[in-house]
Image (cartoon, rainbow, N blue to C red):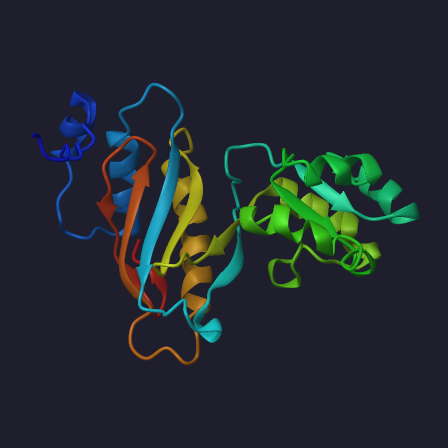
Length: 243
């Protein structure tokens, strides 16, 4: 009787393997890493460029969790769809400021049915008690408004918050394995644009080092495109990336 089938490892295409030959295990400066990732992106579509950081933090301890927001000077390369939870004059101001959705009873019912066709949600403080029941739907997707991520704002600040979300920012969250995965742009961006976005993200991560963490925060870091090979990146915790 045949035993259990051995799981098959995923196969990479010829373009990926050819690109892999252009990398090495030697960590590179930010400028070199960005240039290499752009040159080795094998797909015909506009690949997303991502940063992956393995940290020395322990996600089991709340005080070592990392959750921050980094501004992206050149955006993510994708349109940001903004949901706003507000009422009255603030809701009307949100619509005028370019919010894609302003929550009402119908939209809240859709969310409870599993709909989350937006990228970020903003709420005024008075709405948090009312939308608490949506946490089970929005929380697992990182869409629940949170003061730490600048998505719970005073009514007078809603328009500014929408503008900032539309310009571009990215949320930095550590997963259960203490690894941070974050988008920094698109392969179609210039090297300068990707470098500036990357430096903003890395600087935010470095500044977010938990005070109780002993030793280095960053164990290793790689920069990669959606379909391309990983390129190891040098991160100096005293000053961000090395350009």
